[in-house]
Length: 128
Length: 248
Length: 138
Image (cartoon, rainbow over all chains, first blue to last red; front, top):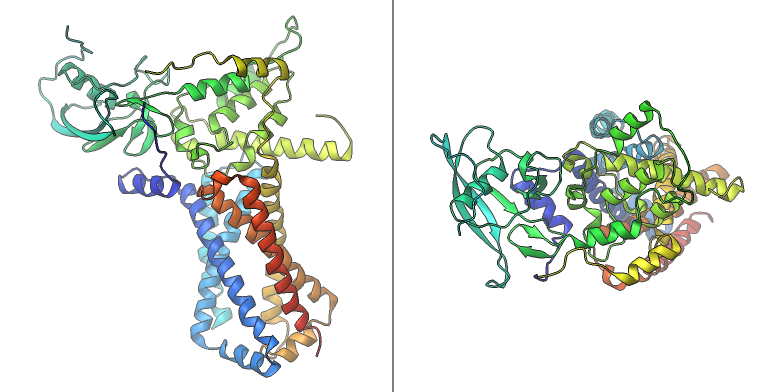
C-alpha cells in the first residue's frame, strides 16, 4: 500500500477538462460562483477604500466622485454588473433548488447564466 | 500456469487503440507510473474488455470485476479523469485509466475501500429498529418512488469520487453515497433511528449542489437532490423543535 | 497486503451502544450554510435598493452633499447600513467556505479558521461603520 495523495479540487477540474471529460455545466457554475464572489469581495473592499477619502476632506471626496463619472469607469461598472448578476442569479438558483428539491437543476443553471447575460446587456442603456 | 480472462479472439479489428494505464506493483515500485498498451478495437468494445484482452496477452493488470453488466459496482475507476464503471464505458483511443483517487492503492487499478465499508458499519444504514416483530406494508407506488430515488444505488463509489467537497482526507463530509443511503434507511417503515439528525451531523451542509454526483452515477440517481431534501427536512425539524412543536 | 474490511471491535462497540458514533464536527456547518443562504437572499433586495437609490435617487451627481441629504431618511440609512453589515457577513462566510473547499488550513481544524474569519470580519465591519458615520454629520 502506498501513501496515497489525494488530488486537489483545482487539479481535478483542469485534468478532466483537458482530457476531454469535462464536468457538468453546474460544476463550472459552482466555480464561477466562487470566482465572482471573490471579485465582488475585492470590489467591496475597493469601494470602501475609495469612500474612506471622506476622512481627508469633503472636497477631496467630491473630486474623487467626479473622477468616477468617466466612460472608462462606467464600462468597468457594466462588467461589475454582469459579475454581480452571475453571482446573484446563481445564488437565487441555489436557494430555489434547496426550497424545491424536485426542480430541474440543469435547466435552472442554463436559465440563470442566460438571464445574467441578457440582463446585463439590457442595463447598457442605463450606463450610457 | 497462465491466467486467462478469455474474451473471444478478435480477428478483424477496426482499429488499434492505445490505452494508458497507471501501474503500480507494491513489491517492486515506489510510486505509480504510466504504461501504454495497444489493443485492437471492435464496435461496442468496453474498457473492461480491453483490460481482459491485455490479461489474455499475459499483461496481468490488476482490476476488480465481477458481473460485467454494470450491476455489481466493482469496476469503478477513473477513465480520463471521470469516475465510471469500466464495463459500462466504451473504449476510445488514448484513454487514461487510473484507480479511484480517494483510497489507498493496493496494486494497479485496485484500491483499498476498507474505509468505506467501515463507514457503512458506523452509519448503520439498515433499518435500525426497536421492534423487529412489527408488521408493515409499503404500497407499490411508494416502492416505485423509492426505486427512482434510492434503491437503485449499487454502491460503486463513483459519486464519492466525483464529489468535489469530500476530497480532503480528514473531511467530515461523508459523501453523497452515504447520505443517500442514510435517507434510504430513514424512508424504511421500520426505521426508528433519527436519520435526519444523523445526516445533519454527517455533512449535508457541506454539499455545494454542483450535482457532479448525479453526473457520475451509472444508475442515473441524483444524490444531490436527496441531500437537498435532507437539508430541507433538517431545517424544518429544527424550526419545529425551536417553536416547541415536536421532538423530531 | 492489508486486510480489507477487517473487524474493528472498538468501533463496533461504540456503534452498538449509542446507535451511531457521536462525532459532531459539522456543528459549525449548519450556521455556515444557513448564514450564506439567508444573507444572500436578503442581499438580493438590499443590493437592488442600493443601486436604485444611487442611480435614480436624486438628479444631482454623486457628491458629499447629496449623500448627506439622502441619508437623512431612516429608510436609506437602514438600507445602506444593512447592506454594509450583511454584505460583510456574506462575504466573510463565503471566503471561509472557499478556503474549506480548497482545503487550505484544514489541517488545523475548522474552529481556528472560523474564529479567524469572525475576528477579521468584525475589524472590517467596524472600519465600514466608521466610514458610514462620516457621512452622517455635515
